[in-house]
Length: 595
Image (cartoon, rainbow, N blue to C red):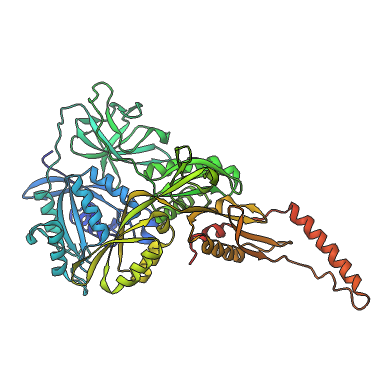
């Protein structure tokens, strides 16, 4: 155990975590040069296309220092705020971390957020300044920022370039010398923490764990403490670039177990594995349950695909523990699921993965957050969907979630950013200069306001410089109302939303205008209306497609023309009574991107 080091790499998005992981693997010869490629640990096509890490990736490296052999277990983590749950689980399986800061951008919001997460878990932190080979790098200023943030000695900070490999040997030495070896008793009863799992169509569910006490051998009869299920360990091993089987894994190490589990409900991230014959006294205190921030309905395009969608979501949930879902039905879209996501990028990635990995094309409704609705009898219900809102006459008041947002930006963009946050009903709580021309702005903003387009707008007005991080702070009473969209007098529940009374009319008008562009013309007029209760606040009409029935009438009495037009009008009226309006999928998506 004294020769094992478990560590993760944490940083803001685009600060070079995956590139640094590539260099570490190359230097320790874990990956052959012929297998080497950029983002070698990012095994999803989606991750390579977007240049981001979506999943945490664990891999074991062998390293020799002063003729001593060490085992290094590295976990590369995502940087985007939507995948912070992946980071929290990785931190729970480590004793130390590399805190990477970009020499061109300095300390960013997510750097601070991930750092606090690591400090809460008592991790040993090794600060690393990356990208020192860039022309725009200013490592001395960044070093001052890190010293101020961590209170460390400037000599503890390692300067490196993940692209060229400069500084990588010093990082590996620091990992061995500064990160403590895991503590645990190899002779005690088995106690292993599940921190991830993945579905394999041929071998069932592969469970990744870190052993805290004891050891596990191939063929052992083990049980999962929370679910109480028992399994034979058909294969155990460590995580190299591919799965690498071993006869035994002991305390302090990270590994995997395959035992032919087919049912996804039997594996829970944060559960404890122990032996059936000699069980441990208590389960390891796992990580906190994930709390979804954004809710949206996910429906199959074909109703008969409902069960396929359920099994696809269950398999995806194994690989993405932050995804939650419950069945629901909609008048417009039939049967589907109400899914909880950590943010809009998370929702987009889940939709894309359903399409690519499971061949499931789905319709996603307007995303919203969870509200606490208090009725006049003093009861409280949590509502994730505007359709589940009680009758307005029974509601005493509604509370919505507020977030504490931290934005780090250059002083040049301070004015537009404050204007943007105030337009989203935000309140400025603090502003302070970090160093030179960079400052941190803190706001309290309703979560519902940032859910749709806030991040995109923030990046646009700050020319990509501002970084953004947030956490839920409290629920506060707000004057919220339900906005319904009606097509030919029929409400489309998938397009209804809860919004603040000040924004309702403008939002209704914009939604009607957008739907008018997207809904195809029919044989009759389609009325698109936005309504608050019984009051119509906006209306647009999609004009009917008409045949010119009076073309054959030339000359003669006008009553001949009128007779033909009245006959056509009566036919259109009959058609309208039996016709239904099909809302195209792009209409649901376009509502998310209203300017």
